[in-house]
Length: 123
Image (tube, rainbow, N blue to C red):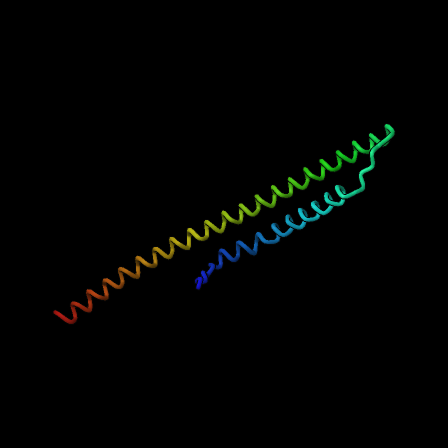
């Protein structure tokens, strides 16, 4: 059975502080993808006139712009997730350092207690 790891308050605070930004980015990304899919699923008409060609070119530019906007939103979301990941890694490192310090102090305390017990019993 996998053991559960406890998160520090700093780690939880980091997650809660960055979650709204990530949620906003994900929401915008989903909206852009839905809009792009609607545009791509529209019935394709083959233009016959110059106006038709101009409209088709404009339509293609709109699709490219929507794709670029979607790409930017994906990049922003990835950057925010990377920032959150960095903060979590930093928090985890600090927790590990604190745990190592506490373990060292406990080992020294245990040695001192054993020395005192030895002195009391055998001196």
